[in-house]
Image (cartoon, rainbow, N blue to C red; front, side, top):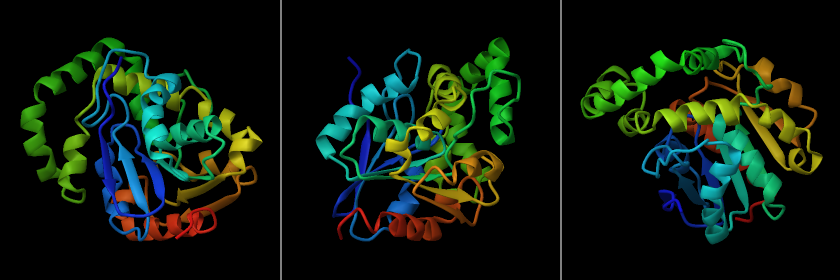
Length: 261
């Protein structure tokens, strides 16, 4: 049995669950959570990332949900907010929990099913190349793991636009958790399939960053008519970290109807 996920909590008010993207952690949402008023933000590190357990496994939606379900049962969130890969996991949370009133997806990684080299497009094409060159990429990942103590100190010096904890936590995953989540959550086609479920889509707001090169607007915009609300916001893929104020405001607007304040 897997140990519990690490969960950060901020604020005081109606509970809302926040899910980070691939290679992220709870720290990716802290700049937004700090600006939200009157919400109880529940921010786990997903299985295999950040401070959460990193067991061997497939890291598909079933495994991510098995780890998340105790958090959901204990916290009883009224809404779920997901960024990038976390947006796909958030859709599955909505599918399995009819009592969760709304989901807000920020630049969700709702790519069609892809297996070809670089077929996802955008920044994820580069990530896909890493996964498909299994021997070399696995060796690289394992080498980076050995260098992790040094990289934790050096990388923040080269990524000054991002909070240090976000950069450091970007190292806190394994080959299994990264490649498995990329292949079996992002590139599996799960996101589009979930958005074709009207019982899920009608509870969803999508906030899509205009300048996103990792999950381009062209990937997400086809779902504009399927969801309850679709809105373009300024910024790139890391908007929750680089533009937390506007993202927090957009989330508050999206949740205003369903989350009592």
